[in-house]
Each structure stands twice: as structure tokens, then as C-alpha cells.
Image 1 (spheres, rainbow, N blue to C red):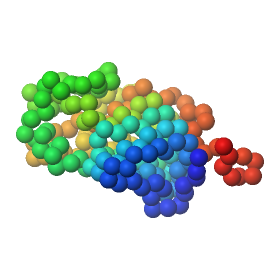
Image 2 (tube, helix red, strand yellow):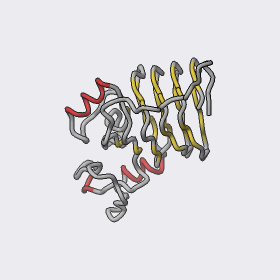
Image 3 (cartoon, rainbow, N blue to C red):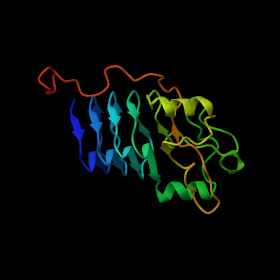
Image 4 (tube, rainbow, N blue to C red):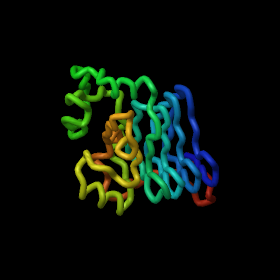
Length: 196
């Protein structure tokens, strides 16, 4: 229930930090939320707008960001910039076991994106469902298929993973909201300070 604005990082977490980011307004920062190397907070009911990048993820998988308003961020609403070397080697060497399908949300996995139709395991994607992404991006999402690239979502459609150029939409954005989520962001009383 805080306001984070005009910083390099609105919220930064690294190395297996586990906590909750709930009901905050995160605006006008270089990075609204910057998470790296195993940081795994619960991120929900936040207003993440007008940052250079809304949510920036580095060396991170198995992350859930649901029920937020994430829009009008200058460069990207959400960006997955790097994955671990162990994970990229698994993909390049075709060692992701076919039986490790896990409980993927419907419509996420597509045949043939990874060679021999091997599928990613349940910890190998970013769950970004049920967010509001803004009118223009919602329109773009509705006009494309899940396996297509989305302009304000930076993932491995935007850069090659390894010399053979594997690409996939690792950020699952389906089940998006058509309108801004009511109640998201910091709750302020009449004095401009946060209230319980």
C-alpha cells in the first residue's frame, strides 16, 4: 500500500527473496519492479504505469504476476531479459524431457517450437495472466495468436536463445482483462496518505 515513483528501481529484489507486492502504485521509475536470480514475490493488485519498463526479470523463471494494471510503460510492460545458462543449455541441447509437461495453463504450449516438439516444464514460463495491459496492447493481443510476438512484452520472441535461434513466448499473458482492474494500486485517504 505504497507509492513508488521517480526512482531508478521502484522495487528491487534479488537472490531468492520471497515476499508480497500488493496494492502499490509504481510509476515514473526507470524500472517499476526489477527482479533477479530467484526473487519470487507475489505480485498482485498493483498499478504499474508510466515507467520506462514496468516489470524487468533477469535470470528468473517460475514467476507469477496476476491481477495488476500494467500499461503505458515506455519501453516494455514486462521484460524477461536473460535466463540462466543451465536453462539455455537445456534448450540448446534438447534435454527438456517430454514427460515434464506439468500443469501448463491451456493454450500455452505449441507443438514444434522447440525441436522434436519437446515441451517446457512447469517452472519454465512466466505466468502473467489476468492483467490489464492497456487498450492498444489488448487490441494487439486479440488480433494475434498466443505464439505471436507482442510489442510491449519482451521475451524470447524478441531475441534468439542460442545459435540455433529457438524462440517462444515464455510470458503467458492469456486471460487478460479488457478493462482496468478496480481496486489496484495504493489506497489513499483524503489527506493523500495511505490508509489501512
